[in-house]
Length: 143
Image (cartoon, rainbow, N blue to C red):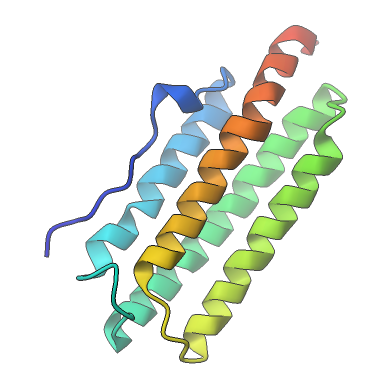
């Protein structure tokens, strides 16, 4: 089975905070694991794939929690006015990933493309819409 890759981390995602940029890059690398696990993105996962995708989602969730804590610490350091919105979006993402994990564990027939697209699109939109403005703010306001 050949790995199916996403449009991975590109320069457009750079927010000019090296630690956060590296975490964003690592997140996209981790997300690409789904492409090496499933044979067909458009059919429901088979039993072996379900277990593997649940493991990947769990790993993504744990990594996201670490990343969100790190990112929010940078925001607190500069009294970023968008911190509350960031926390709200971070919490929504974690809740949605937990929901997907539960649906898979309960036997829902979810095609991998739905999971991959949700996670990828959320992260892409989050970086471009919320993290990029923070990167600019951080550069202008860091102590």
